[in-house]
Length: 238
Image (tube, rainbow, N blue to C red; front, top):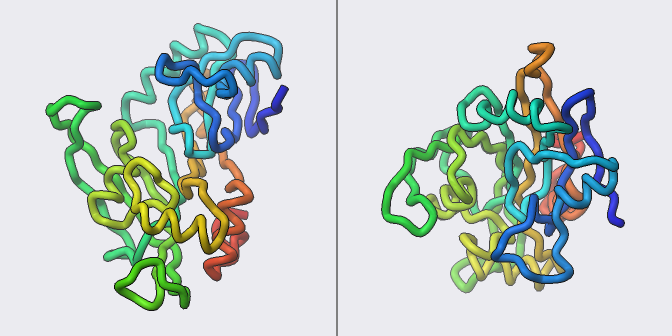
């Protein structure tokens, strides 16, 4: 049975660094016998039922928090619907970001409905690079940025959709990304993963009121791609 890397554990809560390709829990949309589910894997690993407190997309890696029992889950679950819990992400995106720090304020449709919901995503440009390889027919070189992201709201695929909206697509995003960029990374770097990582999760502990920050090391493919693009991974995610 696959072991999930533990990042944090106390009496009532534990967190893992969810690998790419693992779903949080079962869904009717996924019927493959080879599918992996974090709830099942972690429950088997620790020997008791665990309760997921939020979600991370299947192709996204990073911090995923669980409760060890139902009362503990009910004490913190409502906080995820508000703004008291802070999630920070890292991503590698196409192009140079237009600002060093900015807010993407773009309402998003709920699922397949036409109803728009408020959606706010804040970002910071941490580094940028230009490599001497053409990823399209328009330019002889290609530009990329490493960004830190804080979603103020929690809409479905919010980060991915917001960066697609401003045309700074997340590399490897096969649903909302740029196919030409994805094929270029696959061909040139043999890299087909989505470069979006749930880096940090900060919350006030319901029992102790202590401010807890859990940090997930970036996966190997993310660090290798950073090096390939000329960045030193330890500078941004030690």
